Length: 290
Image 1 (cartoon, rainbow, N blue to C red):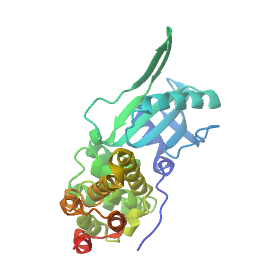
Image 2 (image 1 turned 90 degrees about the vertical axis):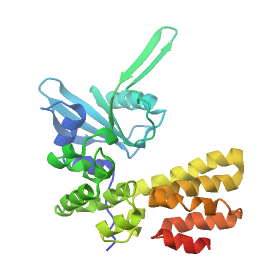
Image 3 (image 1 turned 180 degrees about the vertical axis):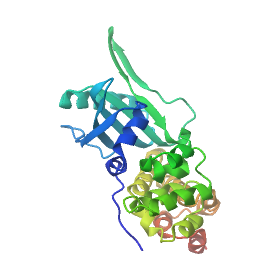
Image 4 (image 1 turned 135 degrees about the vertical axis):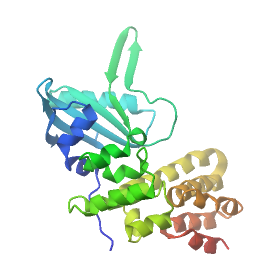
């Protein structure tokens, strides 16, 4: 049965805020306080979560959490801006943390913003956590429920049995079971959609309600539009279709691209693009391409 759920970053962190701030800061005796508003005068993002925290060694401070589906090159400057705005609004020092969910590069991700204009320097350090480098056993063995939905993309979490174990933990807790949608979404990156449907035992329409899924679709459209400026509307559609096929059906979905790339009719390509979002199996799409 389909069910909607609050899968916002704030909701995830609020499941166990003390354990979360201890994990992101590596300060063992820190205690989380209230989750503050991260809405500043001209900046408001759902992926920001600002937590008031206290520690015997560091006193009262803010933990700024920024979750990114994929790392973006502008993040160092953004982390500097968010940290400064938080400190100005609450008059407290800030511990900024950037958490990247999906791997997009093998290059080191910067942990500092730095600029120098005529000898005047601006410097902002921040901690970077890449979820693909986080050992899945840490999540399963320690009380870190906020990370359970991300199990499939953690280090060692791509195994079907591990994903089933995470699902059992979510379903056993009334507060956590609404996070199945997020777990299902990230499971599609490592397992075939048909297997994900079998494990979850409900229609993939639930997955399509996920804000993470919608962000992927928007990303595909944006990437297609960017390429389309140089290569035309047809190439734009090819790019978007390829991305969504990969996201939904994995490498098996990409097997359809040689057939799709032979289609030059733009309206038909648009119809295929839309059909991918509603198709439950690759065979459904094959029938459309005949």
